[in-house]
Image 1: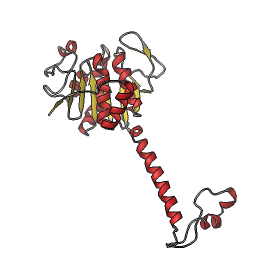
Image 2: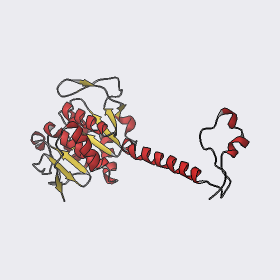
Image 3: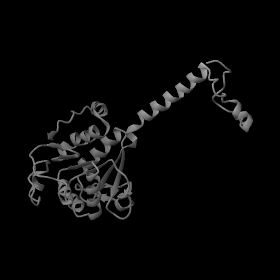
Image 4: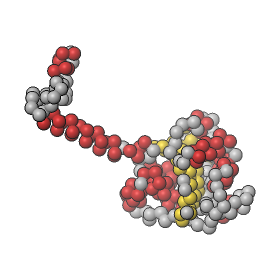
Length: 248
């Protein structure tokens, strides 16, 4: 193609009248190679930016109740944010200004009130364990409804330590498709767990205890962001890659 070479960017203040702006765009059929190369560079830059920031579009809900297990919650939040996942930490209190006291008496502040965000879209819900934290989660009706809805739509559900009790209450577990802390297993109503540290069944991830928090969090990253991102995060942390027991 032949024709005039047109300036693309930037437009100065004196160039913003309708006539002046029009002069910067070529008539149909007169695109020069330079113009086309400029458009191609802009498109590639935009695409690269979109790819780099893809993971920030993933949104994960982490509800915290009084008595949650610190290692499990903070490890999960930290690792997901290292993967550039948007994590919403939500409190069961009715205000974010009230500290949440964890199982080892550390105190924490949340980003949001749980009831205010349950209607929002999340790609995953990750439940930390700890007692009585997990017990508060398993009787929170609106949270259980949110878990049921997300599970039905095929989104990721993750629970560690005693938190699979909440998944049982939500009715999304089946026999020998999940794991749970041995001390909490006796509180299961009917279901039989697997005695494995980390279990994946379809869109459900479960882990046994605080010692498996890193593997639990990295497996969530793997399922959301892919193998490459998980490996990068694990490498930066000098952590072993998770080896889940996958139920077929």
